[in-house]
Image (cartoon, rainbow, N blue to C red; front, side, top):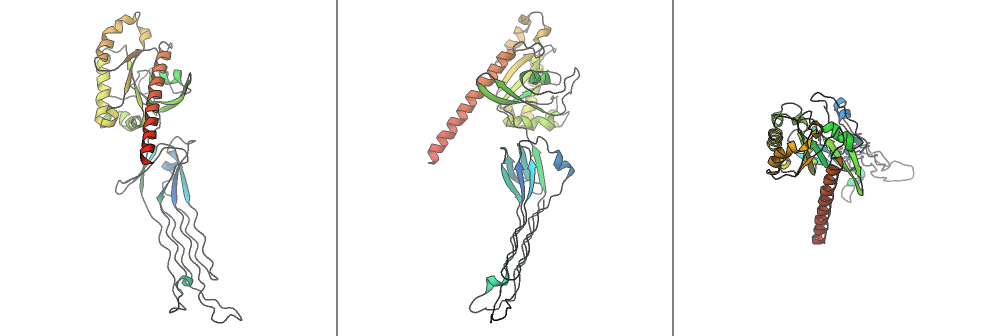
Length: 336
């Protein structure tokens, strides 16, 4: 990212008929343009940045005689999706977290314009024959990451039914198939339910053992779960040992970050339609509840249990939002 250089100041003297001792009249150079990143809610990927890696802002115009100041260079505006994290690639310095639509950050500042010789005129220096050059614009190499912004993240092993679930409770239309790793990219869906306004759900690609160490697709997408308020831990009830699957995923969350491991979870047993009697699931439910989690049973295919899981998500999010708003009000009172 290259910001614009500042324009040069001008060395000029006023020379007009009938104007004796005209004096210096060199104008200032314009400021160089900044490189600015702006969050745009209409974007969902960083694909554009993959194909264009170099951005340069316009340099400031040079000053001219008759005290004409150069125009400022135009900023170079780069639109990115909300959830973009910006780092300095050289020293790994964190620069910005663009969360809301329209949020802006200057990632490379333009150089200041040089002052013209008219600025240096004084009683003891009536004819300065020098001006300042413009300052160079800032050059920066950036590392940019995208973390999807969703209040609820659906996690689980491959083929647990995450894509089917998000397609049933939201407007998302993910690819659904009977083989693992159908989902290669996170899917976002907006859920509108009863009097609760709405909330965004993310279907995160299947994790496997070793995901936190870079195996499979999990390492690439685990960071998306860090922004969520609530994790819906989806477990395939028809698997040989659902409790072992539950522990495996939690181990990978802990291996990725303590923040992710501490996220509240809603544990959901899926595919209960494959059992003639749900009483068969009582032993595994009892084991999971001993871990301190509430457990719900659903069938994403048939729709069984979906109203209950939506109620649970909505109630939890409403309480969390109210708690957050209370903290903000308390903080505002203390600062005032």
